[in-house]
Image (cartoon, rainbow, N blue to C red; front, top):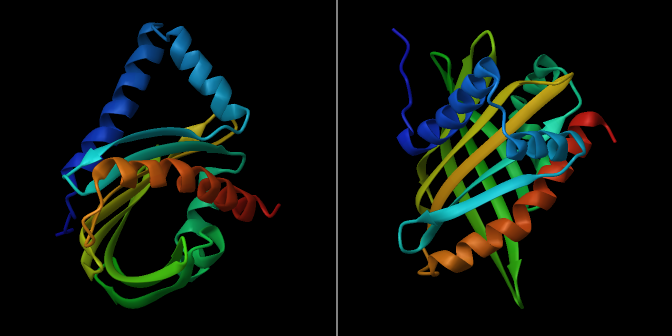
Length: 203
C-alpha cells in the first residue's frame, strides 16, 4: 500500500488552480486574465502569489514555463544533489535515505542578511508522484531550523513545454513578522526560479 504524504494547504491550492483552468478550457470560458497569464508565462515571466502563513511565516506560489518536455524536466529535478545549481543559497543537497519509494534529503542553505550570514539545515521527507498528465514532488520537514516547512513542486504539460508550479510555506524559528517573510519571498524566488530554468535548459 502506497503511503501518501499529505500537505493539505499546498495540495488544495495547486488542485484548485488546475481544476479551474481545465474547466474553463472545456467550457470555452477562458477569460482575458487567463489568456494574459498564459501569454506572460510563454514569454518567460515568473508569476508570483504570496500570502500569510502563521504570524511569523509566509507562503508563496510561483509558476514558470520551461521549454522542455515534462519527462526531461522531471529527470533533472529528481536529481536532488543537483539542486545546489538551481538555488544559489543552497550549499548542500544530498539524499540520505531511500525507503519504499520515499526519499529523505538533507539540505543546507546559507543566506546573507546585512552584515550577518545565517546558515540553516533541514531534513526533508520527499514523495514523488507520477500520473499520466502531471507529476509532483512533495517536501515535508522532519527536523531543521524552521517551526514548519512544506513545499510542493508540480509539473504539467503546457504548450510545447512544461508548466512548473512551486508552492512553499514556512515559519522560521526567528520571530520575523509575516510581511517581511513574504517580501523576502517576492524578492528572492523569481531570481531563483529563473536560475533553475537556465540550468534546466542548459543556458
